[in-house]
Length: 525
Image 1 (cartoon, rainbow, N blue to C red):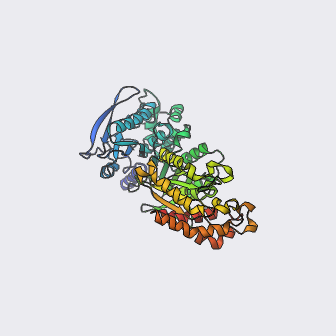
Image 2 (image 1 turned 90 degrees about the vertical axis):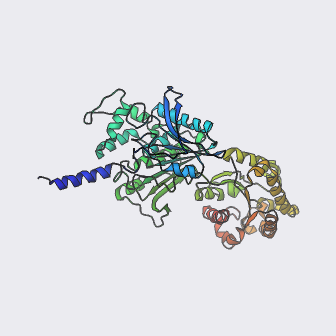
């Protein structure tokens, strides 16, 4: 059967727009803002000068945005993040890292890894960058480079945002072959050193492709315990774009498994992956949104890794690409309800994934008593250390959230119950006199202790705690307000249903912890 010229033209145009990514692999050279400069950075690996676009913030200790170009582009490629970075006075660098991914020195090579390290080093030395406030962002090939940086950088990067990334170069070669695009030829040229392939006659060096694939690299667990990895993909990518969403889903699962081989709840099940691939949708009763797009699927592991599959294709949602830069740094001080897995602090972390929360909660903790004769359970004796640790880990402090009092109301401390409000006042004053507070002036939130159960369901050491806790509420409220702190009452909301939430009278199950965290979240946000 002969095809008409019009039919052939339609098929050509359809295939072109289905397989190319004009929005996110645009190689057009931009007229960069006059605030930016073109610089050269000597490679510390081979000495070759590597170009970059650079903007130094006007103020000191500002965030650094490391924006990584896409697959077929170089450092001069249009980048929608530069204007926003200048507007917010963020340091910004857009490195070349050996240009388009079609040569042996490019595409995830040792030169690429070092070039990105060198670019970060340059920006810290020549800009006004806070070395503890670095953010790496990339889309498509830049997403691949972002994952590569996550696996390799020695810098304490706060956030890595990989949009529609490639994680497995070996698999993507065959996926690109099946889609009939040029990316497989690029990969062949990049993995076979010295090869002069034609458009029809080429092959892959699988060993080299695997070596350049983030998914086959060991996750640097210790180096990433204070970092967050965001992975985003449009659910139609691979259909109307060139990178199947499995490149994102599989990498997320790999990193989560590296953090905890026994983790089950945060892992994406194969049936969910199959549903998304088959229907380009996901059955869910309640869907959130990102920017103006529906979120079809979302998974997170603790406050370390988060995956978002949104209604879209091969793209970056630029309106939210830098949302993770200015977030809250929170110190949480609590007892066993804050220390336990899935406790109220863990729930706050889940609900406020973007925030950095340093948790010092410890089981048995009090405000000002040596519980069980242990000084480590007396917050007044340890709060200076808590403040120092929070600053060392968070490099700043915006909020201090305190939920204590349950253990102070134990039967053994009944003769000293009148000391409890004064101890809370002393704790607040000690926090406010600490150098970390004087430097950052964080907000302080005093949370009422939750209810306690009836004596017959509680251990003997908690007998009488219910009335003692209830008596603390107006006193804690007065202490908080007289010291310019915010008081949060969780007791009143939880009391009517406490018996069903906390079977032992003290420690609610996960549903109760979620309820506590929601009350707290509403107030602190």
